[in-house]
Length: 382
Image (cartoon, rainbow, N blue to C red; front, top):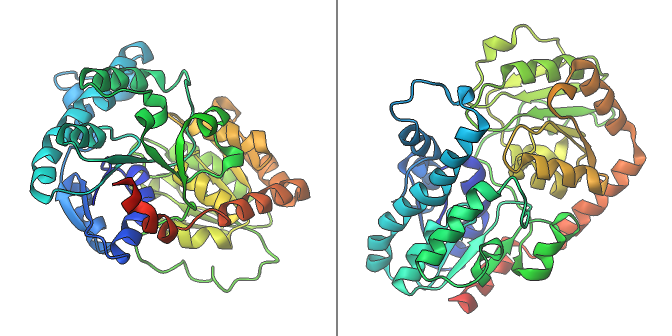
């Protein structure tokens, strides 16, 4: 089997539990992505193969010769660039790189990540069955996703792939989103293969004192994910608000924030560049985050309330899903102030109705088939 995803934490990590389970079930598994993430695949015990380019490289190519920073480009100019990068540049490159790998290894099945349709396109060209693997909630026909969905659908049509791109062209879809928070239209129209939202983190120890701490004092986890964007100002506002609570605050600063930019923090706040998030979430009482799918799904599975501060992409629809089901709140744009973060966090730490909702979500996630269960069924899709 060949698994393939974009070279990004939020796109690659969700596929790792199933890829590892498939390997453990005795299948020969190759995971194809850009070389930047091959060390991650080595740590997971998976055979890496080189394919595609990173999202950052795709945008560097798109902006070649343009002296402006990305945040200086208007939305009207940026949207077509995003569409080309995700809808043409990266799929074409993955399709080209996967063709010789498929020819050499002759897989029975290609499992491609939702944002990497180049995996499907290469499998289609080679006459190999393919199935899609999601990374969170799917929004059918959403306005925000149209900028990518339309060029991807057009590319698929050029290749003679029949069906609706919104539903993975009728291919089986490994869906890790609990049904109660999934898009109802997607639930009704997709060939879903449910899988429990099991997180994956690179091996590492929890911060000292987390595992055996006194649960009488709340632990708040703050993260804005791994996307390379300037987040220090947002983190600072959130830290200042959370620090005033009678709680301990653990902040994962991520790869794009200079810890020094946050200045001196109060004694109840601890900063870490990285934490094993999937292992951490069951120990926390509130997650304050950007709305990335990995953190959103992980909090659902762990039964943790969420305060979402969405910044872009699917983060807004994730935040809306969290609030719609009663699992937390969201703050948008200028709403993100020190006072608002404090007030919303305090309410979520004490609201028993929210606690009831997140417990039900955790039970729902736990009842979904495990990656090992799904791995046992993969031959039927070949």
